[in-house]
Figure 1: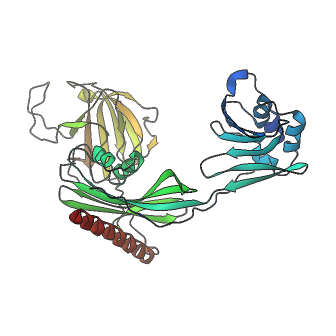
Figure 2: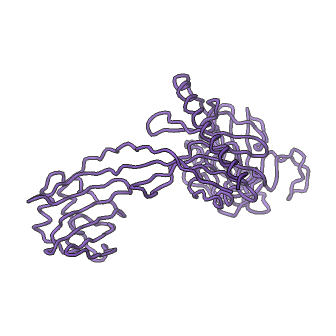
Figure 3: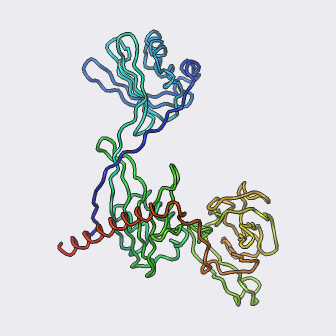
Length: 413
């Protein structure tokens, strides 16, 4: 039985608003009459509150004119202090505009997102205009999942949001191939955040800690802030969960042929070593580079058909064959980042059907991509070691407490 437990509140830091130009943006006009659509109009006594979503080419001026606010009232708003905060309107953002019986603005809110915006309130003969940032609450959520079929469907059944499941896939993507490595009986548990505004959930936050049992092996990942705006996941010992290479170059696929030095070729019908792994997938499926590197070759070569080779370092290189086509970044000499799409699955060259032939080379020699041990990314540095250990132990203790309480509740149910 899945149990969700809530604990802990914390505030997010305020974000700085950029300075913006005013008169040009406030007075720009549009040519198309139907770009602005009023979403809702509600009556509250003598006041009318109008909710508007900004469309392409909208400006504050055109929005207010569309709802028949007079120029004199608009100029009063424009001439008020801090009106530059309303000068640039982003498509998709909302306005909440309160009007009096004379159709004059008494209050205007420009809502940038769920937590911030700009508010203008009529005070005497001008408007008080200020940016606002709503206080946020972070609530910790605990979940434990037993996998019977797929990791994804089991997580949804346990009430874990789609975005959080995808975070788990990303966190463990260097060690676990979620298409090929998952077995019935595997399990995972985690603590993640929910972000609330005025008591209402707005977004799912970060995964703070996760444990994943895969084929009897425990993988633990703990989130740690290395610096403002940059976080990574580490093991309890401080090793980086991230590896220099992803385990699989195609997300949704199955292995049709493994690394085999004595395989009989399906077209040539001769014994010919298979120096890589074949991933069968739908034609046109994206192929991602498994590590950072430089494209050393992109073209047609022998039985591989359309091929890409990437040099990652002096020791490591990878090869991708039978592509249908290349992405724009797959050009010789261009640098690519881990996970970027470099091409699309096809059947060019000597191929019986759409698939990717993938090779992993170490010191120029073929190596089995499914079993090779990947080098780790940088671990926790010595300056952060003490702080990380304290942080990690606290999260591990919280996770164990949740797990113990969940098991006791199940036993007493």
